[in-house]
Image (cartoon, rainbow, N blue to C red; front, side):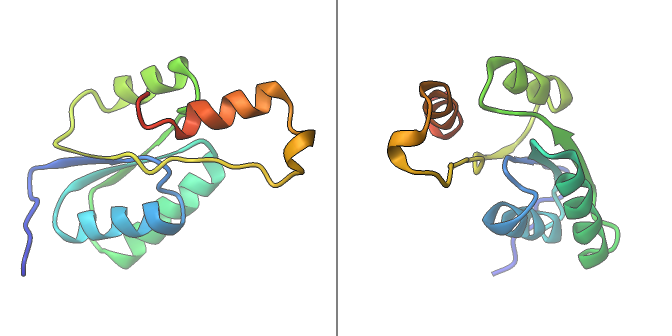
Length: 117
């Protein structure tokens, strides 16, 4: 089945690697303009370069924003105020002993991974 997303804007959060990057690639292959988001600028730059190399002529742009905070969410909305497709893929986790994580760290993980925010 051929899906055409020409003239559509897709925002993919957590798109610098893994599943998010693969989703962004498929959307770009289908013709969407893809806004990829990550909280790490270098990782995002590398991801955009890889997408552009994989799909010549792809319309891809990046938005660095930490979506665990309201300020970061506002930054992304200001950068991409309208979209036709939103893939909420951003998530974080900490690799530490359960009892060693601070309340602040737990709150950041919860804020990042809560699908209601």
